[in-house]
Length: 208
Image: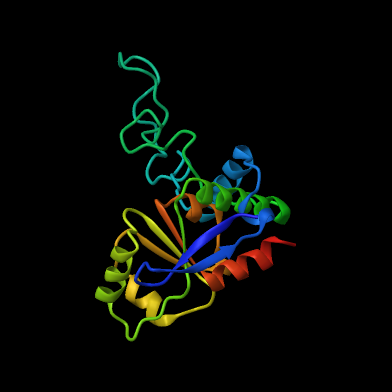
């Protein structure tokens, strides 16, 4: 079982934490991870892009000029896709892009992503995070102490309004609860921070 050092808010070691092999030492499956990320991004799409065909744009009706004798190309409507302000050929229409992965596949993709972060040394385990008040400055100082540079994802074991509100104005910081964990947010960061409570919750969910 992998063992990692656990630090406090001041980046001082406070002990070690033994992690589950099944969750944090999973064999890499890059295609499964790709599918999980693709599914997440597809489900975020609104799918509201829409264009009008020649039958939907206003105007048209009368033939612009007679069929023969003008020297110009034949034209039956001034709303042809070939004309300015005409209809759009094969343009997008509202559609649903979402697709769901089986639960077992989603869980395995999470295991692969967590294991990769641990293996790459991009994971930090915090004993706990406590803030006296809602203060962005305090959260920024905490991140600086633990060397959380670049895009950072913080996973909490349970909702903490002070932590969430203190960090929401910090650019490149994403705060999630353990039950909202997804593969995309795990991979889309340079530093992954987890509280001890979050690790416990994650292992309970992914050890099934």
